[in-house]
Image 1 (cartoon, rainbow, N blue to C red):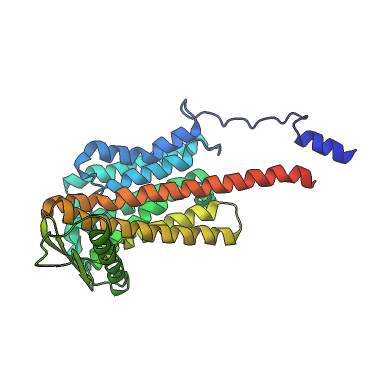
Image 2 (cartoon, one colour):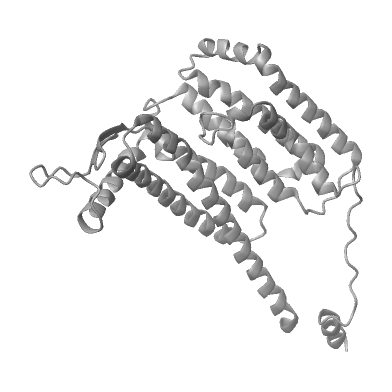
Length: 350
C-alpha cells in the first residue's frame, strides 16, 4: 500500500505546488534587476568610450562584452531571492565603479600610466588596461558576495573569474612581455611545428598556397624555434611568435572559467575531470586552428602588416570564446540529459 501510494504520487496523480516566483524588484524580475545592476558599468564604458572596445585581449575593453555575456547567461532566470536593500548596495558599488571609469580621461588614466615605471612595467598599455579589469573584477565579485553571500561562486562565478583571469594575463604581459617568461614560451615551438606541417601538407595535397615557381621550390611554411617564415602567393612574411599569440592566455581563461563552472555543477569528480581534460584538448585544437588561419591569411590574402594585424587582433577571441560557450553548453546539455535519465529511473527502482 505504501509502495502504491508512492508510485502514484510520482506518476503525477498528486498535485505538487509550483515554487512561487520571487517578488519583483523595482518593478522587474529580480534576476533582471541584478543583471542590469552588475552590467551598468560596462554599459557606461560602451557608451562613453566606444572606440576602446577592440576585441583584442590587450588592446582595449573588448573583454567586458564577454564578461557581460557570462553574467547575463548565469543570472537571468534564476530564482534566487534577493532583497531590495542588497540591490541598492550593488547599485552604490556600481556608481563607484562608474565614477572610476568617468575619472579616467580627467587625469586618472595618466596617473596610472605614470606609476608604471615605479613598478618596472615593460608594457604600459597592458598595465593601464589591467587596472580596468581589476576594478571590474572586484566590483562583480563584491556585488555577488553582497547578493548571494559566501557561496556566490556556486551561483554566478564565470563573469568575475573571466575578468580576474584577463587581469592576470594583462599583468603577465605588462611585466613579462615577449619571451621573458620562459615557461609560457615553451609551447610556442610545438605549435609552430604543427603549423608548418599542416600548411605544407595543404600546399602539397590540397591547394597551392606557396609561390608557383618550380625553379625555386621553397616550402610555404618554415618554423624554427619561435620564428615562422611564410612564403606564399602574396610574397614572403616572417613572424616572431611569443606566448600571448600562441594562445596561452586562452588556456588560462579556459582553465579558470571551466573550473568555476564545474565547481558549481553537481556531478562526480571523475566526470568533472573528464570534461576538463576534453575541453583542454579542444582549446589546444582551437589555438592550432587559429595559428594556421593566421598563416593562411598571410599566404593567400595579404602580407600587409596593418591588415594582417587587424585580423590577428580579433581571430583569437572570435574562435576561442564561441568554442568555450559551445563546450559549456554541450556539458550542460549532457549533464541535464543524464539527470533526467536518473530521475526517470528512480521511480522504477523504488
